[in-house]
Length: 376
Ligand SMILES: NC(=O)c1ccc[n+]([C@@H]2O[C@H](COP(=O)([O-])OP(=O)(O)OC[C@H]3O[C@@H](n4cnc5c(N)ncnc54)[C@H](O)[C@@H]3O)[C@@H](O)[C@H]2O)c1
Ligand SMILES: [Zn+2]
Image 1: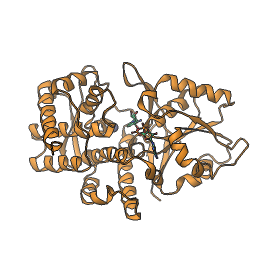
Image 2 (image 1 turned 60 degrees about the vertical axis):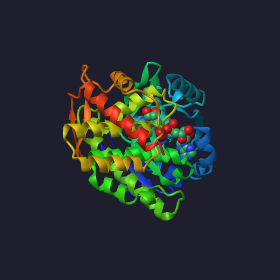
Image 3 (image 1 turned 90 degrees about the vertical axis):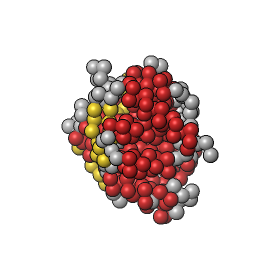
Image 4 (image 1 turned 45 degrees about the horizontal axis):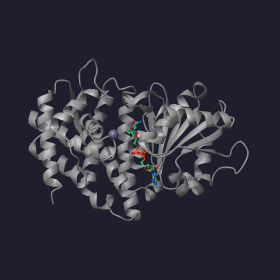
């Protein structure tokens, strides 16, 4: 079973990837700090619990302090708010949780981000592990320690860097995930290939039919595990070199400047995050093509791969509106907008001088491609 390690100034931990991890979870957690007593609190949503509670509970004692207390959080981005953190903390307190509590984030990125933040602030900090259940959470959000919630004023504006003690990626969980969620999450793997890992990119090209197959054959399971492992390796290496995003970690934002603008323009309702990132990536590729940092052939390969893992839901917005919305992106520093552009497949440069005109032309080209690719 692949085990990757993350080593940052604030923490070192393993990411274990494989099938059937859920059924041995309690033993795996016990091994993190042998001999240390802990009380497990699992944060999950009713939907996930309905499918997976039996497997989850299999390795834990049925009663006593080792039996998990289940805290439910409703699914959906709109519930990723301070109110949720307060309500979960209140439930923990009422259940008698003290500094021995260990939180298990069992869900997608929303549950992961909230639970990591709750772990940072409940009684000034308790232990936590990630048990990601969406493809996006498995390849991206569960690793790296960014936690937090949204404000009405914008996404992820409150939070902390808080690394988990371990990440357990059970690929079986993908069996119940809606196919559109899986495809959207794969856009983050394509991103990892484009910015850092040419071999992952080629693998995604070569094995698209297997990865995107409708049934969970052992062959598909192996392909998904390969893609997850390679994607997590990219994230783990980048985060290990730059935990708090002072430089290198910015490359993970490839496709996200316009991606976030697209999400805002469609009120976070119409597109899945990965779909918005797919369109945003195509726009970023147009900027790179116009600047000549990539060749037309490289552009075509990257744009084709993004579309191959679609369909990406279309949306309505003008290029001017999208550019205007990039101004609220929190990734800018002192008014300067960092923009990640590929210089080859698997390599990038971060630049700070992309103009509004360039962005607008790129957004227009992307919208034009959307019209032609979804017209049929
Ligand atoms: N912390 C980070 O570094 C980071 C990185 C990327 C994204 N994020 C955050 O992640 C969030 C998006 O996460 P997401 O895409 O996982 O969405 P999500 O957490 O909203 O989950 C999507 C849906 O899938 C359901 N679901 C989850 N696992 C399932 C399973 N195994 N079977 C059936 N249904 C299942 C959920 O209940 C939910 O309805 C955003 O809030 C984003 O800001 C964080
Ligand atoms: Zn993303």
